[in-house]
Image (cartoon, helix red, strand yellow):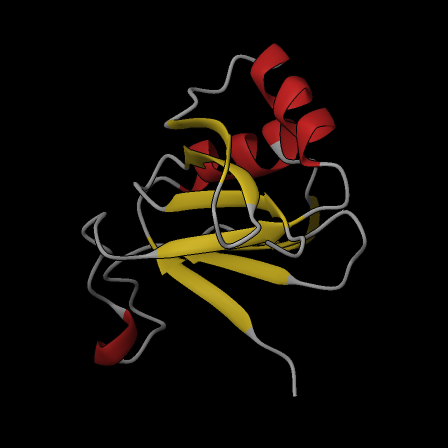
Length: 124
């Protein structure tokens, strides 16, 4: 089984720039109403679909409203990723920090309002 999260948004171009330039994702497929991106290791994907597109069933037409969704990206060296993303000018929503349960992480948000938690897990 493979999961591909999808966001219905009019901000497809902005999303493409953010995920490719800030996070290093690659383009798997793209047309005028749909964009499929993959993580640098090609293990996970995320897609973006224009709202109210005539090719889609009603369930997949309303735009995402920008709240209540987050993604977690697990990395081996969160401090290095933090410095790299900061250097690219991304707005850091939660500065890098250690949590009592073992996470070392920071957070950014994509152009659609999706929170992205970037984390290295360790034992508390």
